[in-house]
Image (tube, rainbow, N blue to C red; front, side, top):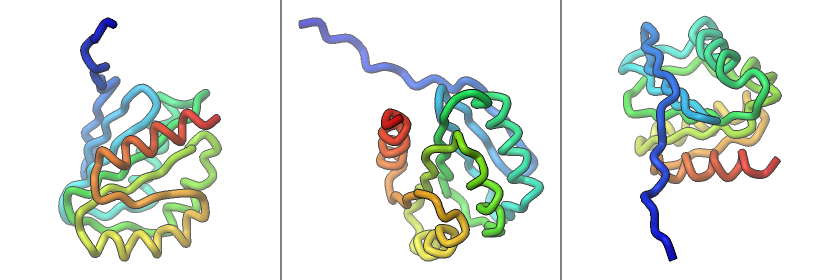
Length: 133
């Protein structure tokens, strides 16, 4: 039996926006907003544009890794849910306030999204959802 090294996750591209870091991987993206930022429709369009560059013709997942406190305009989700190839939306945070906000955000998204305390669990869920074509 041959044991190889675990497959290394490679960042395909990294974008530094005015209030966020966007990391694009093979079939998902991770977004980390700066402390005090607000996810507005304008900023959501920037992220959607990045997704169209990398995932135009394939399914992808999105992880909001909430390391810093920031605000979200929940109407952004009405636009995100129109992305037919966005198959998994996960939020990872250890903050209780983010858990409460997630319940509100979920009402606007109206598609499957999940909250995780551990980033690794969010990533595993996104990868599993993308396998279920």
